[in-house]
Image (cartoon, rainbow, N blue to C red; front, top):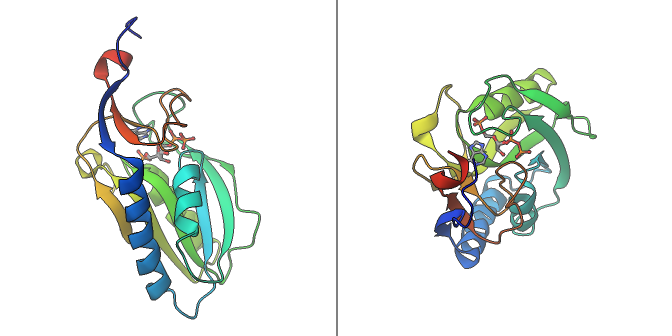
Length: 182
Ligand SMILES: O=P(O)(O)OC[C@H]1O[C@H](OP(=O)(O)OP(=O)(O)O)[C@H](O)[C@@H]1O
Ligand code: HPA
């Protein structure tokens, strides 16, 4: 229930310049690790859209980009544990080095599902780059290869990440006030 006049933002965790700096570091690492390869970089809609656009411009390789849409929250704050693939990649993934780009790993269900999905389709390799990791919330184990920031168990909005489809356009990553959704 939204309390009238309450500020929805509890705390700004990462400012735009900190996000840019981390994208540049991750981009350099990915560029080094994928030397000589032509990875298929797959963003997970909708939340990863902003991170994806900043990250790919820091990868100095001949990448191809694509998107999937996967969802398990359906507007709530708790994963249902059942992941629905709403949209698959347009490009074939068989034989490709796939790098999944995600905004956040929470329960782990979405990334576990997607990694399994791409392996099943015959990808040569599947790695994961995630901006925010909430290790305390994990329900299933997933190996992540590139992590922007480890964060505590708070509900995040901004920089592409939503609460009930709002706040995606904030330029920073913030903790949503519990007053706003409890
Ligand atoms: O580790 P998990 O518990 O699976 O949670 C992480 C996923 O949840 C959010 O997506 P959501 O389903 O809300 O869709 P959205 O990206 O369209 O906001 C987030 O963007 C991740 O994709
Ligand atoms: O903290 C979060 N914010 C928004 N969506 C999410 N999906 C999992 N965790 C979160």
